[in-house]
Length: 142
Image 1 (cartoon, rainbow, N blue to C red):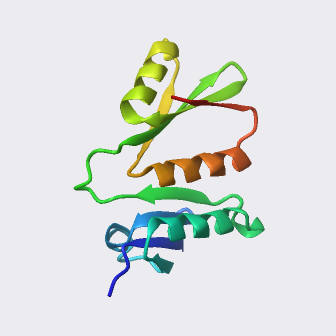
Image 2 (image 1 turned 90 degrees about the vertical axis):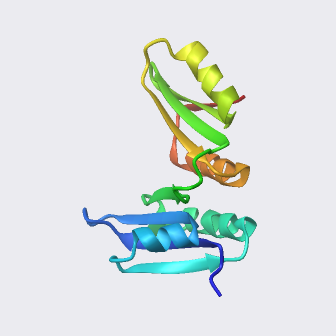
């Protein structure tokens, strides 16, 4: 029996450690030809708990965390948008349309980077990770 959520840690082609998390089937498909260490979970809460532990471990401080969802899941309801203003980062987060509207109203020619998440749990965990990894950042819920 395959559990629906997984974390896979592997060495990418550039020799850097990377971590994929999300839907088991999609992660296994993407990493079918790459050796990876897998952890499987019954629900998203267990997945997020493990991500918190990993992100607090010293050896994984510089690791790249990438959420993976199935290609058939085309609508990500929760988004994080990052915008660089002067010497700080502004992060807008929330439901897709609200976050996009807030960024659109303020960006005025600035570069904006966005990432969608299939669930609020995953978006909130990513924000917690950013808070430990990024300094000089303003978080704006929308």
